[in-house]
Length: 107
Image (cartoon, rainbow, N blue to C red; front, top):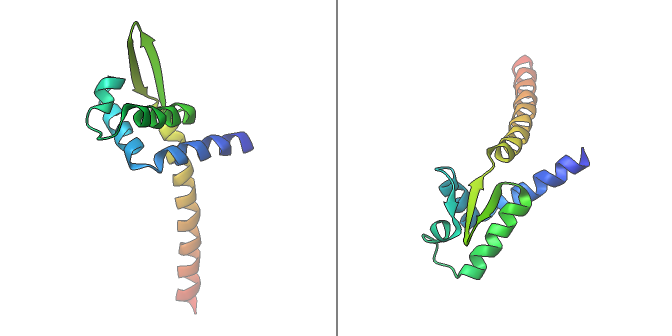
């Protein structure tokens, strides 16, 4: 379980940055080359590549090199894992607030 939590830590770290979230949003439309992916961002390529490295390390993005072109693709199953954790937390807190509301209504 601790290993799974470490994976979630890296996913949420990657999601914490607006540039990386923008990259993921773009990849939601389909794979893109690094050049295509970097185009809308007003940052230098070395900085962009650092963001890409964080996304790769988190498992949210995978890349493959074909000749001189490096193509990036979203790994939606990793996003689903992060969403599943949030859904479990939401269910836990909703159950707690429901119990609290029932207790208050009794009083």
